Length: 219
Length: 333
Ligand code: FES
Image (tube, rainbow over all chains, first blue to last red):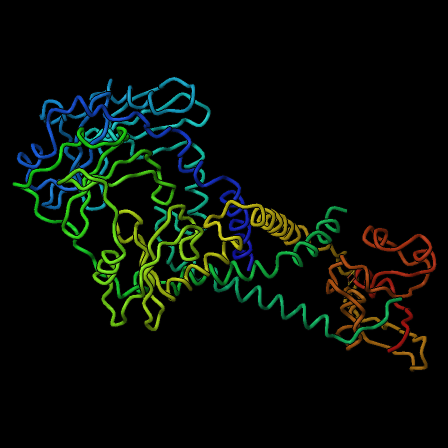
């Protein structure tokens, strides 16, 4: 019972943290502003028709601005997760992002006023095993805000800060999954919540019994 | 008296949050053990929009009569290509989107028709019911509380009241839902106390309840750890006789009791229940008995009883040991 009591306190405390901090803030959404630069359509000399001639299985094609230049982003229909980037002026594939370019993208998107503390490479592995090279740009602000930029596409795919890490731990403690916080259906949680429901119901029963008991006038 | 203060708080907080606590626990258990969202919507089918492009001439984007957008994507609807001009790039799909669609072969503005929506919905549904006429509905949408964009809705009169929501411009399926899914959604609404239908859990009501629950569980933890009263060590194990006189006509009672028992517990063992809300924990102050005036007084009794009552010998049954208070008076048996 004392153990369940401890988890009760954990549920209450972690729940309070999670409801108090705005979920969009936790996800780091205010860290960047979305790009609002209109495309330089007149610069485009390599048309969508050209692109489809050269890459007949291109799918999910998007024309965007990357480092002041219009580029096509697409995937190949053969089921690859990899994002291809082709220059919409020259028609040539765009190289992986350099460290300096990642820096520029991060600075342009960042809404804060802190300077960049560090830019480091990271190769992340997706659930299907595909490797995705990233640049990790950390800002020198109070929350250690960090942007993860895909080297292939130049997209900012993750926004993190210290509050997120705390939130992540709160979540793990809340669902009692201590390794990666992904399993809401774990047996621990099941046992403890079952016991808790029984405890709460027995508490209710005791209360009702006490209220229904013969009352003796107090002295 | 920290403990008494806590106990008082604890009682009122418990009263406030008890129902919600039970809801949190049961819905939590539901998410953990019974919910299987993957199994909810079995009538969902993937719609193949994409057609064959190579060899087809597409209209050049710069020739389209529209202000330059932030991004252009090539989208497919029922086998035909269209340009989608995005004028904003919201972080979530449910945020308000500013877009325009153009036929990618002719470059003219394009608007999807209800017939096309009906056709897509039919392809997206594998059940046997037929779809209702598509309606374009604007938010707030009950089934999709976060959605800020208008959506097409097609309903199917099957056993689970399936509904399909499709993008207002492209007709792509946004959400396939039914009563089983709606039940899961209801559980989330209850867990998040989201009775205003915001689709989120950062609202004042739940913050108030979460704060109260936090105080409740922390005060509970405190009481659990510091709640046990220190009992003086047993002086002798020989039973003593407790004499009780009743103000009513009942015969005085003489009970054989252990001197280390509290009066409260000793009486309860002989089926004489003192009034109490706390069950002898010393926090309710209800278990008053009349002892002799010189019976020692402790802190808890000072807290609950007035000087006058103490002077006249009124004590708390759960704070007195039968060893030190062997004569007492009660209103009736
Ligand atoms: S104070 Fe509640 S029973 Fe004694």
